Image (cartoon, rainbow, N blue to C red):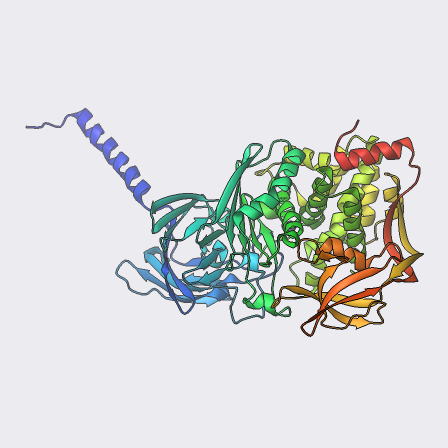
Length: 619
Ligand SMILES: [Zn+2]
């Protein structure tokens, strides 16, 4: 017998409350996506979503229009079709698509599942809105999947900050590289976890046969994952190229702000359209994320050419950890995937990042001072090709179609703004404080979870530093003026020559191309050369040295920029016959533009500032 006492009754009420709580905890408060990579039909993968509970009667399922780090409308809703929301009994719920990305579902409180098919962006027929490959998706049955989550998965309006689970069925021989937490259930099943949609979009995933390497850089484990269809590039090679960059980054930051970082590389092969057709919309490059970066770079047979490219791009992407990850405005912190407001500070997010990508290399000896100067000269020349523009205005309006051409100047003038700011800060601080120190101070003040107010950043930088910094921003960042390279570079004893006539030597006019079929370099567009060469002659050796990808840069210098009039001997292949041709360069006058030249006798201050600039050390 059991007699319920008064306290027993309370007990029961309590128990019921507990049960109720337990029940709501069991209710799904997350998104669960399922997909099977073994089943690719018509270049599409089917996705199924068990939505979070508690949806309102009318709910909007959103695919992003714009994603962070890329500054144009992509409308990822274009890539999903056969959208089908159903209730518990499998009955279809009514819905309407508004615009390209918003699915308005009626009776959404009854929603039990959504299924739809996803097409990849890389070979999508609709080229009207091009998607930069590192921000897109790839479906190649049995060999490779590049999954930028925003191109596969959506969220419900007002519910983007709930957790996500991705359940993948996959071929046993494929491995998934991604910065998200991962549980491998079996050889053919993985689950990835993300605390919300923002983090999900921030963590691209690549499935393919594994080729991976990892190592420690200070306190951070760096992971490398490579897909190279012809097997021409390996993770070991890429990781090797990145090692000096990783060390330089370690020295630059001291303690790195993340515990792990994933470099994910896709190298499109020659047979892939973007590579053989230069007019195809091929977006070689990379996209940065907080804990990873995704690279889409040409699969080139020889290493030396790849090295410089990978080092420049990897340094840039990793440096984004500083900004925007650790220094960003409210617009980025609470990113609106449907209709984002843009920040005014692309000069910092992209410009400073690009500048630091060069600066860390010269500080760690990966670039010589001469190579660093060359890079600055190239930036100056490229920046001159753009119209004068206010960087804050361009940045604020970057999403508009008309601004898209100007955007690329963030890597040119943007980087030079970083250099100019360094000059002003060094001068004012007497060689003790520069752009690096400023960015570190901003990162300490803000960090990953504390955004700054977009309108106040420049005032704040002026307050943290010197009044002269305001003039700099007014003229060159808010204002449209070209940087005054002469005045700025004088700080470190360098002279800027925008135009000069000098004496030089020249073998005439021709181009050097590369024949992918024979793996040899060839002459092209030969005009008036002092060498007895013709179009399509293959170059086998220069001055007795066999020419290949490894030494082409060094040996081509002999052609392009002869230092004296000594004779050049070439071994060439003309119509299947090997022959030697000789010739001397003629003396010509050349116009030099946008040159940076160290002055002969810099004063003590200039020497001290230059040392601080190129080494980061003040004494
Ligand atoms: Zn960037």
